Image (cartoon, rainbow, N blue to C red):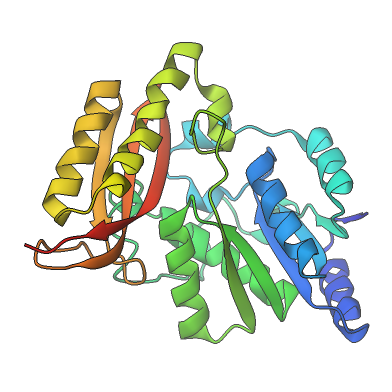
Length: 283
């Protein structure tokens, strides 16, 4: 595995792989790698891609400085894990390379309107602008590629798909299923910040979306069902919503068909999210 931090070396490695007839598979991460990230790399390798993994903790997507400071960083472990997975190129760009003016405001921001102002965007102003901006830069530096994203961050996935459509990036966005612990908890780098008791309460998120998926109902009934499970588990609820999986528009009770149920809440002060595919039964 080759490890680089220089942006030009990154560009040249991706271009050289394409010249050799390989398709580039991009796996963007913020490090603190776990089995969820492993699944993205394996999906890329299964397709025969030249796998580029990026590790960059992007400060522009953190609206809370304390959250940024607390974000886990495990560079040595991450490098060993990436090598064991068969990553071809590990890119670890510095903050100065990615955002030279930071912490001064960056002149260019990518904003995907209509689908980033609610759900996670309501409580985390500026978060999705920061995500869209850094992902756009990753795509520009990598060039034509397949990019692998987990479905756990479903709002992010939908936003990236829309950005690719709108801006015409030569990127195929590949969605990979949520990876869970044996007890159902969705894997997240933030899980390490949970206490033992907090981890048990956090299971309320996976149970809430499982309850929504268990039986078709109207959107209102599914929202109430999820909120009830979250509150019973002791989760500080941020939202329990049912949306169109493409536009992320909240669903109405007259609608039927496949939709996405999304929940978010705080446990031990840690913000966690989960989601599942559900069936709506219109009234």
